[in-house]
Image 1 (tube, rainbow, N blue to C red):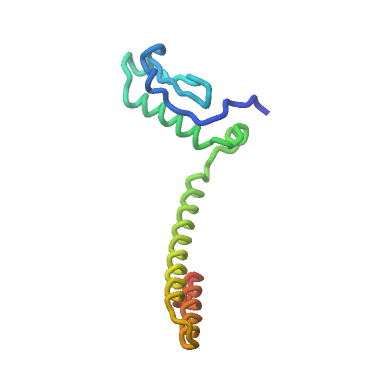
Image 2: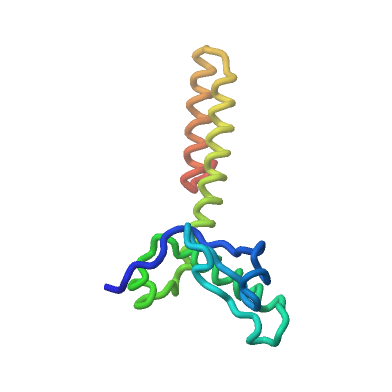
Length: 138
């Protein structure tokens, strides 16, 4: 097992750029100030949008991998990460739609008067909503 990395979220320290760290973009991690430095003079002597984008990407990757073991990342990476996010997004959309169907049906049921005919209607509406959520005919 490798040594443990610094814990906490990463952020760009835009306030200190160019002050005490000439030609660097400092990245703070947790309580560690300037835990990493992105050098922009590799692209010349001026700071470029590409170098800032690289620094932002490093910060985003650090934060996205928070809580994932480094050894695991080195061995396996995140090859199916985008696919998993897409699947979760699709599932969330389906659940949100199902919730709306069921909430509307229950709201309509609660609006019915307490009467035997109304109870039969409420039962039918509940069955229809459940069938719709399960993928059957409504």
